[in-house]
Amino acid sequence: MAIPLQRLRAFARHACVIAVLALATTTGAHAQTKASSATSTFGDFSLGIDPGNVATSRESSVFAYVVVTSIDRFSRPATLSASGLPAGVTASFSPATISPPPSGNARSKLTLAIGAGVPAGTYPITVSGKYEKLVRSTTANLTVTTDAGFKLSIAGTQHITYLGRSSQLPVTVTGNAFNDPVTLGVTGLPAGVTASFGLNPVSPGAKAAVNSTLTFKASAQAVQGKYPIAVTGTSGAITRSLPLDLYVNPAPDFTMWTIGRSRALVAVTQQAGISGWLEINARPLHGWNQAIAFSMEGLPPGVSASFSPAVVNPYGPTSIAFNASADAPAGTYEATVVGTAASATHRLPVQLTVLPYIDPNRLANDLTRVGLTLKAGESLLFNIMKPEGSAPDFYLNTQFGPGTGAGTLYVREGAPPTDTEYHCRTSGVWSTFCRVDRDPHADFPLTYFLRLKARTDMTGASVMATYGDGYDARPRALFANPADYLINDNSVVDSPLTVAGLNGNGGIARIVYRLSHPHRTDLKVELIAPDGQAYLLRDHSNGPISPSPEQTLDLTGKVANGVWKLRVTDDVPGGSGTLLHWTLDFFRRN
Image (cartoon, rainbow, N blue to C red):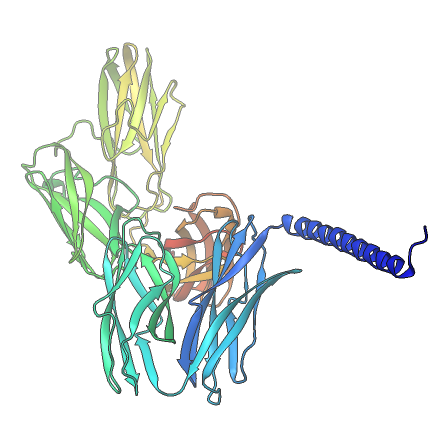
């Protein structure tokens, strides 16, 4: 049977539609597979704006934050842009390219500047982020008002609050032909930090200014850092937003430690004319700026202590001189150095050893004590004192000969050694040395204790101690900068130190610094002379940084006086730290 021509044409059209739909379905599926394959290599991201509605009058600026959120561990750089801006409005991003951490988010500050001739109205603005062919967008509404409205103001662009404490910031709302209430808020607060207003909402009136106190409170569990936040004021469709960098820091404080040694010694009585000395340092932490007064607790009878200086403001070193009277009882005592300030007090334990004036076991330099006899398990205790005066090349060598039998010689600075507490020990034949380099440039006298212990019966044993020559009673020139300097990622920090009061060149100098950083190989450290010459101290190595090894430089070709700098460069992404302290120590040979 013949099919009519009209039915044939309709059938053909139907078949074509089916084919086209099938092709479109296949092509769409293929395109979707390609897109999925492309994004699966680096994930995806989304954009958001906080706040999404902002308003301001002409000839002003308004701020919002663009939030880039990682999806599927996306961590590539997304370049931000804005479109749909009305004439007279400009947009800028800080930063313009942002990389969120995998499965996290990152923020960029969007600034919209409104010119004088922009018509009042609401404008949808499209903000886009692009990485290669991957583009994501979001929309914010900008409302431009006439001169009527309100103004939001705060003091400065930075604010500090301390862990476990609260801080306050005045916020002022000024009206201009405006009579509606304004609700205040804060966006972008980090975890563990809260914000509240003493007066909220506020009603500025037509031409009045109203103040409200913004109180930040940081818990002890909040994370130290710098956080970009915004203080906002909202009334109807009008929103004002002011950027503020909130720093969450530990509270200002100070710490004390002994310089060069861990023991204070009162080694003889007053009749011998020798005192025990101790040097300590007080270092500021987190912007400390208070004076610190020093005192002692727990001194034994007949022992006195004096500080020079007795007060440091706000930080610095002090020397303690101990004196023992003739009737001070011999023995070892625990005492405490106390540092007292307006808002903090710290204590540093020290040990004092009072020796009898007539000491039969005092060793003379380079003289051997011979003919010693001990039973197995018995011990003999000796001591030797390094004289007062600077000794850059100081060393102490101790040695003993067992005679018949076997024993061990223990050596310790500042206190009698035991079987487990000593600075070195030696056993065996006479030629065995035990060398101590505990404090090579101490100006004060040092007492070392030697304990000879017999492992078997010993007869005819010998003990000798020798300290090195080269003492220089002239004081060394020690300069320090104990202030903290934040080492941001990919940044360079200079810590200045002013050297004054020295004549001529620098001579031989020693440098020690303390750094805190999670990745020590990120760091390069240099000493910069006053004339700008750089001395490389560390080049991305993996050695100790708190403290660093003592490094010696020949600065005989440099004028000593001037501003020296310790320069720390962090040029590897992924971590920040702090320069805690550094010293420049000149040993001068005028």
